[in-house]
Image 1: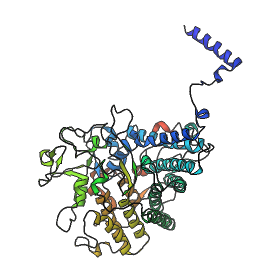
Image 2: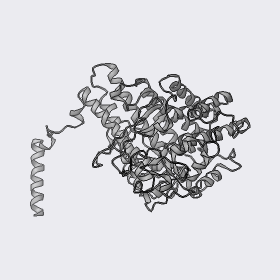
Image 3: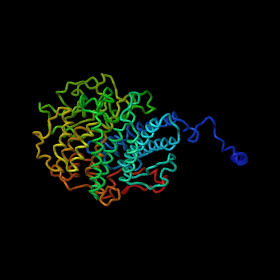
Image 4: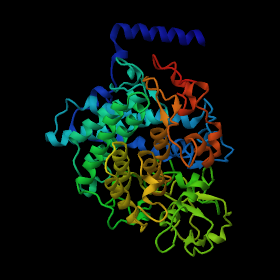
Length: 542
């Protein structure tokens, strides 16, 4: 039988060599040579390029694990290696979360590259229509590269759509190089994207979204260069402020009239504060990855609402408790962010008061992006949470501008003005206050620490904390783009930054930047990728 099949194969190959049968294309199947022929097809390709944002490796599941739990905001007691690896700095080289995040980020980059490459020569109904499509593809490519830089700190930055060639013609980039490549993509996006879209196209990237990611990228580049090139760092702090200015001065976004809670439910989607959000929707079957799974993994761990694979650190609640409203009531963002034991809270969560769940006094759980307002009997599942993730919102932009102004040595009054806009939205007293007098932030280092507090209270649980820590504390000291140490030039509450982090999150006891080649600053490159990409090497220490 084996011989027979070998003979048939040989005959077939001989026939093909004579008649070229194997070179014939199936007319019923499309490929890259036959598909990209008109505007409609390019638009469909662009729509597909948005899809990886909802894949498990991106904002549906693993990114919030790799960013949120690894920071001092969260931790895990899950028996799952996936969740431990995303939290305690003891990552397993075969971790699925590390592998699938890399894979899905590069899928998104690959699909965006297809649009840019194959759509370039397609004739559109108008130049504006084409520019808007290309602008969105640049944005999606930049967002993928930004996340590769922040998670792995090393990787190729492909320009060609064929993944088999995705490091052809350029070198593997370290973290700073990846951020610079993302910056190029966001600059191209900002040139082409509209300021806003009609309602039927809400959720597409806008000029404001590109500016927001340019501001974030500039902040990370400033952090990269602080260790070895202060003048270069100042250039990027200036750029960070510039793009925050662009968003704020556009007058397209406002905090006025936007309830803080409405940033984390379906009713408040595309509100006046939202700059860019990733769209999710409830689904049936779970196979199309329309919903997100955050609430099922990181929500209220009672009545089968959550697996509790990730906790909020109690230090997050304690950060809120440092001050209160002028009435003496707690910061309202605390109850919007966390579930915690509060005998006075009579609100119904999934139809029950919190006191009925038996929450321990020293525990806190993530509330953002959960459907707590649903009636009794509702259960969070993998498929039924359709709350859009607000990736960029105006409060974040105000706090980033305050940070940039502080690093540039600008007037304290201007810095406080931006901080107070964010505080005023939820009724917190303006700074200076009784708790935070002017002496609390009368130097650059003190103001930076104040901004750390403000970002915790406003943005806890929103993906950004690990990236913030990277910018504030981690340094590339020899200019090779690899973070290798932690800044120790200022004290936080009388402690070095690492001592301070260990006091807030015991998992940082596993973080040691003085050994193992700086491995703790980044996740490992998936081992499967190393033989597939010429020149790609494992991160130091792994």
